[in-house]
Image (cartoon, rainbow, N blue to C red; front, top):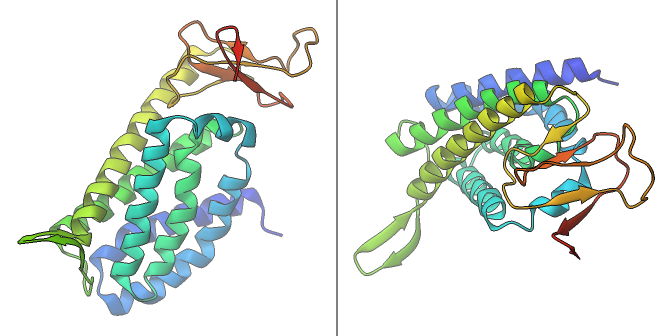
Length: 240
């Protein structure tokens, strides 16, 4: 059984390989991509497995987060089709890791480590997006997605713009979560960095507030405890 520490190291090494692969010849990038996937995929799966399902249900109700998640998935899947070889395996690993980046507010454990991993993701995704835009990746197959008259929407345009947008928004969320950690004095409270709607979280069991209580932030952000067993969403006096 791999230890979490080894999984984190493997994930970091695979992220470095992800950033290097666009700049090396295809003959070198193919075996490197397979190695990066083997050592990094377990860590990506672990990052997804620790997400709180209750918080994810809240996040997917917002249009901006849902659009952000769709944009990253479309750009990543399209990049896999553009590679059309073993290098697509490391992109698939990035697709798995992308789920944890999109729903970062649902990660209420190891937030500081997650911030460090997100910084690496921002750099690697930005490097990949710029490489696709500048057409510097060896043997990358571009194709037309939509054609209307003399106008064509190329896969390279969708992937490059999507990845650069993903890197920008992820960097914004990392900055916001860093500010949240600096403001909160208690390590048992996690304030959502990307969810900006007016929302309140409370326990299903109306017992006395304790270490597992869910707190309402006056600004309308979300603050939840990692130990809270169940949460529900409320808007004003009306239960959603």
